[in-house]
Length: 122
Image (cartoon, rainbow, N blue to C red; front, top):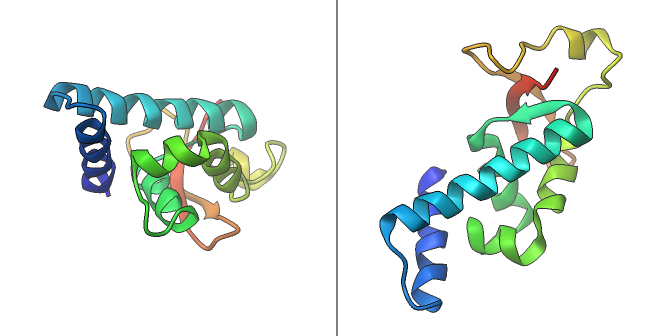
C-alpha cells in the first residue's frame, strides 16, 4: 500500500518537473499525517497508514495514492474513515488501545467496506 502512495507521488513529481526521493517521501508523509490528524480531531481515532491507503484506493479506484488524495481532498478519506469509528462515549471506543499502544486494533468497517485499523486519539 505504501508503494502505491510513493508511486503516485513520483508520477506527480515527474509531471511537475521532477522531485528527489526525499521530496516524494516527505509529500507522502505530510498527506498521511494530515489525514491522521484530521480523523483524530473529527472522530477521535488515528488510522494506520495501511487503512488510509486502502480507503483511498476504494474511494478513488484507478487513481490511487497521492494523486487521488490531492484531486479529491483529504476530507473524503477522513469522512469515510470516521464512519467506522464508534461513538466516543461508547464502551467499544473506550476499549480501543490508545495512540501510544504498540499494536493497532480494528476500529470498524467504513461505509465502503474497508476495515480500519488504528488507535483512539485520546
